[in-house]
Length: 117
Image 1 (cartoon, one colour):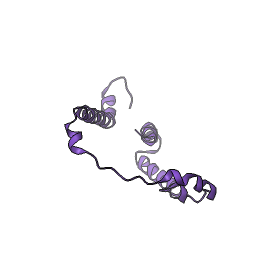
Image 2 (cartoon, one colour):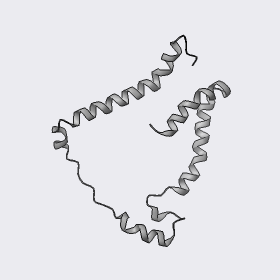
Image 3 (cartoon, one colour):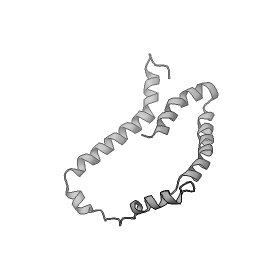
């Protein structure tokens, strides 16, 4: 789970209570627009293409940035391996639980008499 999701889930109830439900969406959009220039300036496909990197740093990094050829995934071998299926099951269960917690959790808590959601 990403840090942004944790912060958004934790702060959205406060935003709804104090500013209204529309501001959850407006706030996310505004934060995205504020974040975009920093992302465009600082994020590059390669460290050597960054404008703040000196020529000396580029020369130090160049040997470590060689592009390695991609290997094909051995799908038939993977599908015949019994260890693959518990991993798939664990990923499915984890995703299902995260989805249920996110989507059904607030309704469940609201139905509890001791919770004020």
